[in-house]
Each structure stands twice: as structure tokens, then as C-alpha cells.
Image 1 (tube, one colour):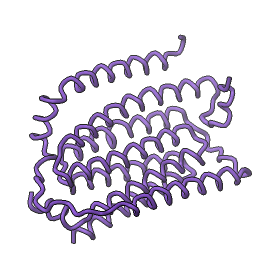
Image 2: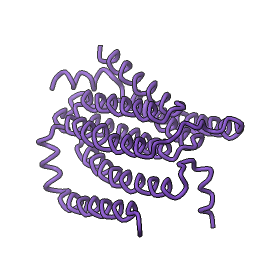
Image 3: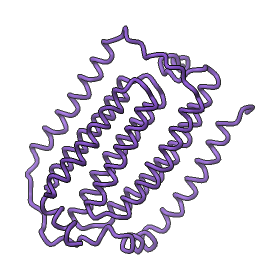
Image 4: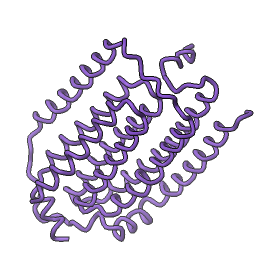
Length: 109
Length: 164
């Protein structure tokens, strides 16, 4: 326990903020430039994970457990979201034989 | 020493995330995303949040990524490359994501950086303490989360049915 405490004292919180900002922007970049629907879903997962990391870092540096409970609930919602999203992608693939999102513009009203 | 470990794990997460975004082959992309999730789990454990580290490994690196790989293998995508002739949308995407990063970091620089207390209670992320918190204050959201998972399972089965 003392070792991890020294980790918290040795690494400033700013490093975690910068790391999660870069990871979040990487996920945004993937959503913007990729065409594969599965990769786009994975990029959304990357964004959720960067926010989870930031929340856990704040929770640990403040000594408050409520943030980590919130991270746990975000993980639960992400798991449900992935199950439904991958089912939708599988159904789209069955109908169009592709997961390229540029041919899904038939969905626009 | 701790900073070296942090920089190593952070570099691992960033490099594999970068490869995930830019890899042509979807299978290798998902595999490098798994490395990113493992390094985030390592950061949780370094932050003394053991419960979150274990849950990250079990749920993300275990369950969700196996689901991704399973769907990717089931769909059997023939490797037609993404269209190379449209470079302008990619350039616009890189530009706007970089602009977002600069905006976030700039907003962060304007913050007054206060130091945190030295004597932090570092046992807050242990499973025992989080369990006490979860089953006392957060027991209603916990049960609602189980209903959400059930609804998600039923919805996925209904969407995935062949003749609906």
C-alpha cells in the first residue's frame, strides 16, 4: 500500500489529464476518418476508457471512492452498448454484405 | 522510478491506440486495442484501484474484446481496402481532432494547478471498501444496472434474429 502511495506522490495528476486527453482525441480521430463500422465502435470504446481513466485518477488523488463506483457503472453501460451495437452491425452486414458506413447513407430520411 | 513506469505504460497505451486508429487490417486493429485496454488496467493498478483494474481486465479485455473479435471473424470481411481516393475527409478529420486536442490542453493550462494532499487514504480503491460503498449507498443503481444488462441481452437477441 505504501508503494502505490509513493506512485501517487511521484506522478502528478497533470500527466493523467494529458494522457486521457490524447487518448480521447485519438478516439475522436478514429470516428472521423475510419469507414469500418466495427472500428468506429471500438473508437467509442477508446473514448469511454480515456474518460474512465481520468475519473479513476481524480478519485484516487482525492481519496474518494464515489468516482470509482461511477467508473464501474460506465463499464456496465458500455458492455450493454457493445452487445446491442455489434448485433446491429451484424444485421446490417446480413442485409448489405458490408460494414462500410459510406453505403449506409440509405438510412437518411 | 514511478515516473519511468508511468511513461512506459502510457507510451504503450498511446502507441497501440495510434496503431488501432490507423491500421488497415481490422483484426490487427482490434488486437492492438486489447493492448491499450491492458495498459489502462495497469494504470488502474498503479493508482491503487485494484477493483477497477481487475474489472477492466475481465470486462473489457476479456468479454467485450472477445465479442469484437468474434463478430469480426464471423463477418469474414474480404480485405477490400478503404477508399484511398478521398484524402480530403481524412485531412479534415485529423485537423479537427488536433484542434480539439489543442483546445482541451489549452483550457487545462489556464487552470490554477493546486497541489493535492500528501496523506491520501490510498485504500479507497480496494475491493473491500468499494464493495461496502457499492452495496450501501449505490445498491439501487446496482440493481438497475442488472435490469439494463438484461434489456441489452434481450435487445441484442431480438435484433440478431434472422426472421424478425
